[in-house]
Length: 425
Image (cartoon, rainbow, N blue to C red; front, side, top):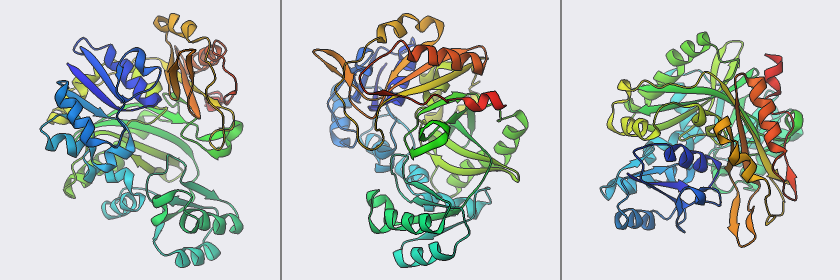
């Protein structure tokens, strides 16, 4: 098979790596890809939103399957464009990807179908939002309705923070059109857990749990980022909690989308909060999380191609989804100053050492790298996802931090407490 991936980050590198292990895969292409992806796939200079060019390339090169890995093209209708051209594409159609594309839609869906989530209100009028910020219960969470690269969520502990958040999202439009509408949510407390699942429109098969670290600095300080590291599985996601989530969240969400005429086929990401009242939904994503994919896919035993096809053909109930009985931790190496201002173009050293240890469970998934005459250089805020396996979470964490020492580049920055919660479990 010839497979094309749409995207350019660590998630896409992980997917390409996983596909490269499949005996069914002959060639891998990636649009547009990055420096690391280019070592195992042919990168093509086509943007993630250039659907016409993607479709034309797929036809010209006999692509058997396209995996749309990013949120923007999914919400924008990439899968629809491929299907309209008679081509196979993995991922939800636009009318199902709206589950991630609009937080207001997802909140309304959960309310309608009784899926547990935080209390909320939607705002399209900035004056109404300002009035709400003056009197709402604190703390409060304000979210830009649309896609905002994982950064459109503001947690406000004071009245001043609440009022500033409204201005940031709706008046100043710091998240662009994503702030045309705003969701105000009650603040929930508890353990956060990320759960990825394959869905074929009816059946939902859950992958191994994970936990992301969104804040830029240690001890969950600093600005929200696309993710500074993650670990899998979460020791807080027990069998009992899984059974509750499957009954009250996972299957009801899939059933609700089908009832709404928006059958979901692809990867559905459940961001959960384990509250005292039980598990509740923080957010949905319509694709693999990043960096969650970097600790989940290396532990998945199944051939990714087989599972993707089952999702598309409605035969997921026949798949026995299995994972290794171990753990993985990913530490993101970023450019100092991310997610605001940072320099790039620095040569990366030590990647060969990681590659030499791959058979021992060490990986470096590229998020923001570029191939130059000098070698691979930094080309983004998040540069690499350094991932390692271990028999236990503590061992995997120690291995991952050991591997970060093998890699160096100017401006290198990372959090030092990824998976610290493991020690508290």
